[in-house]
Image 1 (tube, rainbow, N blue to C red):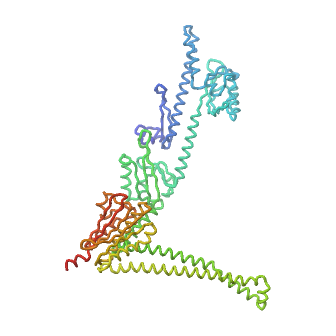
Image 2: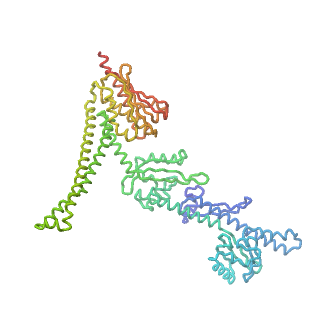
Image 3: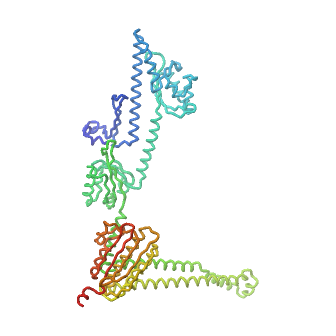
Length: 626
């Protein structure tokens, strides 16, 4: 953690003085029986946090230190025991065997050699490390050294024999049919006796941990540096501790320029208060993470919209050490959202004014489908014209003109001239085929354009009659609503079923009724499509009702949960992600204006739904006047 944030050390000289210690980590050196021998600590001048692998490595080094300390203590005990045995004759047989028992059970290899380098003693661990068999001498140790390290180890040993001094060196062993192990050997002149004393410890596990640590650190560093989104670590005050290149690029600053800066320095003033409150709640533990969208001020003064997801990084005891923020640039999305919102408001304003939002949407959708066909036909005609062989006629004419008076001789005697009749016949067939195809596509274009004109004309007829009542056949209204959705039924595989009974004509505002029916039919189509059923069915039913007619739109789609039935016609309520939440609400209001009602029925999820529109045969005011 950061030493400047620790109340125990923040005022210490080694923190505020020239050393400038910012990071520390310690591990108690404990014996097997729980006793404390001291502390192994590491320090640094840059605040940082140890990864789990680094913590494991520190603990492993601590255990190695404890083992070495205990070994030295045991060797001193042996020396004392040896001195005691030499100075007294009262030692028991059990006391005499203690030194050998300790040496034989030591977890590290211990050996003694004379001044010539010949081993005079080696404990069992020594033989195990070098893979020596029972019939091998301990002086065959070199055979257990890894072939690549054997020469350097022997040279180190010979150099020590020439100049005895404390020596520590590392190498690998590879006993016959064994695995490669990493060894650390320490060699010192023996005190009080002739020769040398050495210890050998196996630190293969440490090497493996180091390798895993390097891999983990490399993976983390590469992930951090190469991530396409900004990543930054910060302390509890928001000061940046480490930023990746993507984060620097997002704000337009270099890493050095962001040192000791905080997120608040770059947060737009309008978003500063909300951002600070969210971070305060995070550090208090009220929330697990922060996910917000806010504006940042770049180095060049421009504004960037970013989505920041921030969480706390905790130590093994669950205490927060720092925060990590993941930042993505959503400026383009925000601009698109704002533009979409602007266009949406304009569209809704225009739709409300004209009263044709649903109708216009379906008309445009159908026109769009037709225009796709128009575009395909036009492309085919254009491609056919590009590939036409008509230019061959010009080349043939030029060839014939070049012959002049020899034209007859050229046609009858020249090989090229003889091929001209066949070429003309082939060219004629090709041009005829091109003409037929072009005429066919032009006819298709004409039909599609007529279809567009009819669709737009129908929409215009309803728009012109907005607010005007007239007497119409109910079947005609229902069929018009189906025509406006016809393309969608085919595209989504929805089967239509008509159940029309004889009913009297009604006097209504055609536009309002069509607006209601178009919305109900579209909702039923969506419900069928979202159900995933292969037998998507939409039923339109017309039947008499008390003082009027009843129009039912019935689907076998996803159905409606009971808890949603009471909110269906509330403003803003919708269960579709793309829904706006006022279609049913405006439909219910329109039905009320017409003197009728709009209600829904459903047996629950997966059981389909029915929306029933009941309308009087004549407007309420006309009925009252009669």
